[in-house]
Structure formats: structure tokens, C-alpha cells
Image (cartoon, rainbow, N blue to C red; front, side):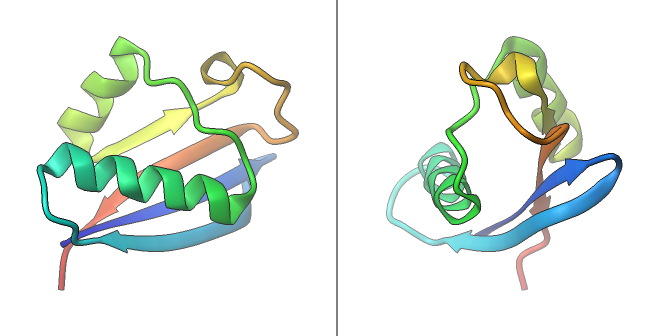
Length: 88
């Protein structure tokens, strides 16, 4: 089971957050994609683009930070942070 905490930050404050889980049949990447889609739907934002540096950051730390460079449309927040939580 994969648990991801998604939070939207503006001026270094969390303005929205959610924790989602995914335990679908398939690979780790399938579960991660399902979590990201659910987080974006719950936070009412578009899905960010994963750039090579984002993937590297997530693989190293289990956490990734997206900013305006990862979105096509203008965002009204500073950052979207996705962080993998330990499964319980």
C-alpha cells in the first residue's frame, strides 16, 4: 500500500492538504500515478509535469516539490509538495 501526503503551500503555509492511499494491482508507478490523480482531484488542481529533476528528487528523498514551472496554467499557490508516508 502506498500513502502520499499532498499539500499546497503559499507563503510557506499549508493552505490545503490531503493524504491518499493506493493499493491497486500493478506496479509501484501505477500506485503512485493513482495517488497523484486523486490528490490533484481532491485539491482541485491540474496534474503537474514531472521533469527529470523532480523524478530524481522523489527517488532520493521520497518527496518532491512542484512550482509554476511544472504547470501549464497559472497557479495561485507557491508549491505543491508530494511526500511518501510510511505504510502502516
